[in-house]
Length: 315
Image 1 (spheres, rainbow, N blue to C red):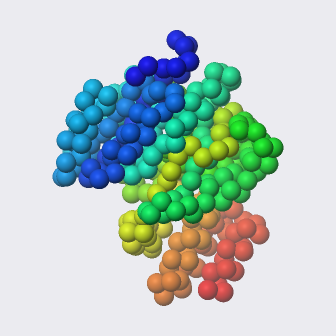
Image 2: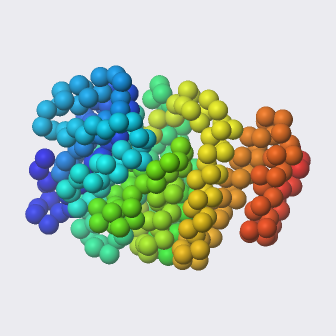
């Protein structure tokens, strides 16, 4: 696929993990093929599908590279794609979501304007399965609203060191709006395997720990579908337990992070424990809920942790 901005422009390898995704994968692939700034390559990693996902990909011919592996999870699939990619930048897309037409162009232009950017992210839309709009990520998250204020109506803004703590604590960018240099991804070891949820937060926090300038596009770059039947909604208690497990692993690495990133990671863990506490209360386990949030009072003493304890006590 040819680039549209010259020889020195960034080359994006777009990585799409897929597991039994035959129904939605064509839309995701077509959204990459329709980019106003062409992807260098599209890689679909079939993570042990039992439907006709592979046949769907083969139907695109040489426009899409198909990689197949035994089922190993989404992190392993993304990492496999990164290992096989030959573009200098990596972009990601889940098989049930899609890019808006200028997603790659907006990042490409910003990269060419500012070579000091460590990675890039941006806004996106939350959509219901029927296509109706729920909201936009930057408007929903406090860190996103702060970046919109900083941008002052402009299309792009740079997140700097003083902004990163809030972004780590409650980030507004998701996987499909992330562009990262392939070399940086490799140095960090990619996405962590062995976690059922929150693997994206784990990687993004480690990426923030080695970054000081982040490009942000302040307009929606893609669609994120909220599924009513997703595993996290089907069993919210288990999802929150898995979330805290991942964040606890991240806490073990946080001692080596810069102070703002470490504080952001601990704030995210504190909020994760609170959400677990709420899920436990809904399951009638009030004592377990209190025990879920109390560790934060020891680790990060202060009003925020105390407020969470009081919230659980009030039920």
